[in-house]
Length: 271
Length: 176
Image (cartoon, rainbow over all chains, first blue to last red; front, side):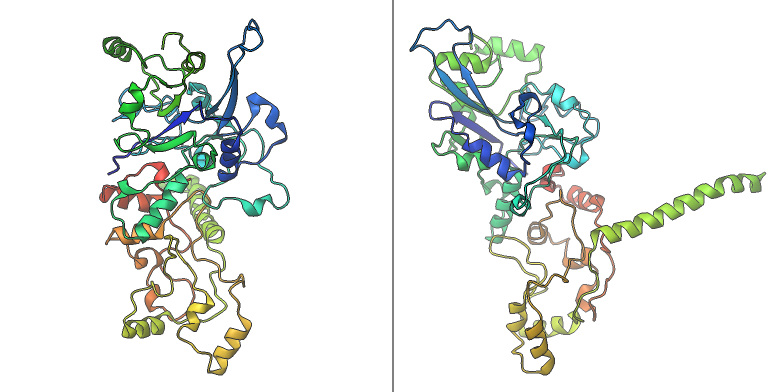
């Protein structure tokens, strides 16, 4: 029985917007390079590097304008009750192509997907993307494909799964070294290992020794979760909101010391 | 009346039977490539000899790499660890055969989305052994197809065992 819950924290103060995480993600997950990738609504990418600014009204003076880059992947939502995960995308799938693992990672099996795109509509973060085109690779690109990940065909929904094939690889390695406890297996997703400044940190949310211990992150004034209105609320108000609405409760935390950025990410001025 | 009913439904029965046969053949064809091997390998005599030496089960040849990957078909160096190439047949074999030769295909090719981990299944359970999927390969005298797997490995068998042993049955355990 797995007790780990994988989670991620992204320190936006350290992020330089270099895009190495996006490149590593595309490479690791066998994403073809489409001609239309500059077309944002039809772009097929697991990890989206968004550029945000505090000057959307164009009213700031010179020197006051600030820009930040926000890497956005699947938030691996757990719903109101993390013990009984209930992401918005799982219950709408008519063919059970997506479900939640014991470690809280939301799966997406492309070959089972029929492309109805309900999950894409249900996702609050637009983390799921639809494969519009048949995957085509340039001449020698196909030899460099990752054998652990299947290539998603045209007409399926794809998304980030926290590189769970790397977890399987590390699990096999741990078994070969004689490890019996599955909770001792640790791994690093591709975006985390590619980040040159160490802005993205990955680990177990339940472990107090982990860099992403959830209780510590929740009390961190710099931490904020994307489009989530129950963080940094008083406890009784939080409980009241939890009763009236199902919240996605994502497992990816953003850390920023700048208030305008936290407001933009959380989507609520008072969070 | 009964005969009329039978005549009406006969085409359906025939169609169902034929599609069942075609399905089986297609599965075999799609999933098992090259069932006949270029070398008449005798598993039985090799197994008995290795047992006499004290080397374990199938793992001497079909073992694992240090990172837990399944080796599958052994390479020529594994043969050379016992055979020194003294006889004429061995000489010809070592001269002509290379590891990069393609014809040694696998018996059961998994679909692209399956991440089947041999080491996780074999080291952590006592129920699943090599024979439970690959048939009685240990006592076979040739490299022809034997028994159970026949190129098919339905997901239900994996899931039944996972349920019985209370192992997680969620998609990401085996699929990617």
